[in-house]
Amino acid sequence: MFFETLPSKYLENAVAELAKLPGVGRKTALRLALHLLRQDKSQATLLGHSLVELREKISYCKICHNISDTDLCPVCSSTSRNRSIVCVVEDIRDVMAIERTGQFNGVYHVLGGLISPIDGIRPEDVQIESLRRRLEANPAQEIVLALAATVEGDTTAFYIYRHLKQFELSFSTISRGISIGDELEYIDEITLGRSIQSRIPYQQTLVSEKR
Amino acid sequence: MFFETLPSKYLENAVAELAKLPGVGRKTALRLALHLLRQDKSQATLLGHSLVELREKISYCKICHNISDTDLCPVCSSTSRNRSIVCVVEDIRDVMAIERTGQFNGVYHVLGGLISPIDGIRPEDVQIESLRRRLEANPAQEIVLALAATVEGDTTAFYIYRHLKQFELSFSTISRGISIGDELEYIDEITLGRSIQSRIPYQQTLVSEKR
Image (cartoon, rainbow over the protein chains, first blue to last red):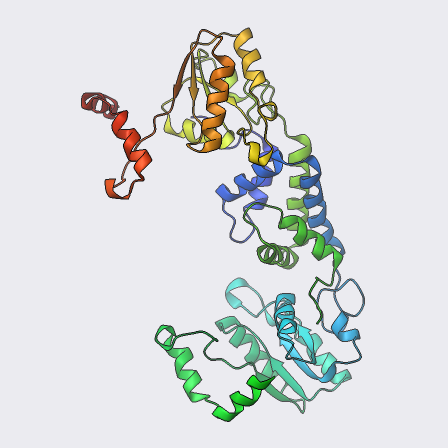
């Protein structure tokens, strides 16, 4: 039977590389490769070059390690941000999500990943040591741990807490609880249990709703 | 508010190009780009180069227009295939799917697309004229139209039929009907109606099951 493998090494290479992307299997990879073959030649070329350039030329903010073409990212170079509150996040998507809320006026520290022994990501692989040096040079008052509510997020938060508790700092974490629009009966027990434990005075919600 | 746009033109370029792929939105594109940034540098480079190479170096079988690194694809260069039956398909995935069935011993003609006025794909944009020239040079007995059961597939099949009926050829199309494992109550009316119209003698199914 023919075509158990693809009849072109160029197609095979492209499919094999595309299939390494998260969420892309061999079938999707072939669909994407054939799509590119039907488009204008420039589209595949632009995509290919943009990916090579991305990895080779990308640079990071010297203070918070967020992705930035300039030495300092827009947040770190802003004069209106409160440098005594440092929000620790996993990556640029979290910075964008928090910025969109318009509720945070401090600065960020972007870890670039979460500690995950299963995936071979050790504390040295994320920007924790640089956070320690940053706090030594520029003391802050509060660290907000805004990490995912997963095993990796909790592990990383705990590691950072232990690693930095020598500093005179208050640590906080974004609140866990019920999302706006959630119905109680569909919420998992742990979330619901924690949200009862960490209940807040009703008047307080009224105040924060006012804005 | 910061970060409504991405703070790096390299990231922005990569995300914009990735988001042009079918089924990939801006959010997925950003996830893919950040994934590549966390991997070994070589992965992004290999992917990027493979896509550029794909579009620049890919070549096609001189007879059937299937993707092939050699002048003739494995099917067209095989001595055991029946050249008097030509199966017309949209792209290489269809060739692979039909080859996997092991039920076809003819040769293929790969259109490279289907006629679709809505998407601006005209008859000249797919390999129909080359099919006419091919049949002029090497007469065949039967054309099997194995195209998708969609408006585009039906339009293309009808166009090919009209364009080639000058030749002494029998035209056939793969049968439409009920998939193995389907339950009648879940099948759409058109499919079920056609499968009743084009019912086949029961004994015939017994024969084809024997293999």
